Amino acid sequence: MKQQWVLPAPAYAHYVCYPEFLGHYSDFPQHAERRSEGMLNSYNLHLVFDGSGYVFQEGERIPMSKGSGFLYPKGAYQQYGSDPSQPWEVCWVHFNTALSLPLLEEADQSRGYFFTFDLNAGLASRFEEMYRLSAAYETRSEPRLSAVLYEILVTLLQNSEPLHGSVPLEIRHSIRRTADLIHQECERPWTLESMSRLAGYSSYHFLRLFRSIMGKTPNRYLSDCRLARAKLLLVSTELPVEQIALQTGFHQSSYFIKVFKLAEGLPPSQYRRSFSS
Image 1 (cartoon, rainbow, N blue to C red):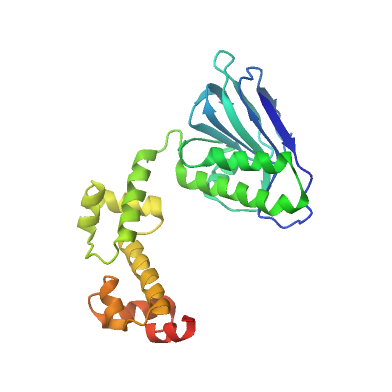
Image 2: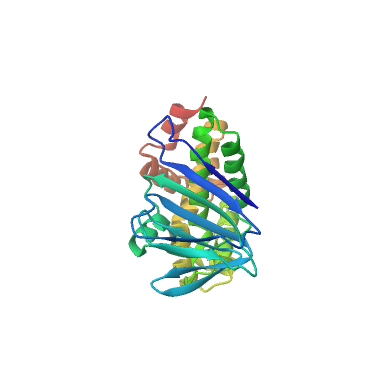
């Protein structure tokens, strides 16, 4: 199967990202590309959902199998292809963007970013939506095409790892599951030690992993979750501030008021007056 679509330049010139050329190949053993430096003036993303293939980078042949992918920046030399004996199934897109994302920066700096990704992260369904929109293209579909591409890039940012990365995907999932439980039960008297035990790591290792994966320390994340719940209770209930403090894990209302004012720039009572309906 060989499906591909070329989209016209969007009528609106200010999308943060937009697909230009995209496709879906399977059972296509002839798929192989070799582009010289400067030939392709857009980013080139390929995700392998089955089968196998390869990329060449600085003379090294890098295998690409199910759950692998690659991202080339604008103007980079590119050489890749399917394994003829076990053709890959790939979803791919050429696109332009003004975004500043770590995976784009990595591709720009190294002239090619090669990674593994989580096959259960919903990327296939997002590509399928882009295909449907492209096959029945209308100008009113442009905002959604841009939005789906953005979703793909951010999903990859959160669910991919360099081929030789130091944090495997299963560890990332473990930390995110722990973060979700902390969010759901933010009123509990969490400590770094209790959060670490929940994740199954030492406190030192958990702190390092959590900060790397979530972009903040566990205690900062916990405080953000508590404040988010407190803001919801302030605007949607008539509970007194003291009770809201208790229900969100702040066991002293004076400390809750201090933390809230530091984060929001105004005390809880004024926040309630400003934002409750």
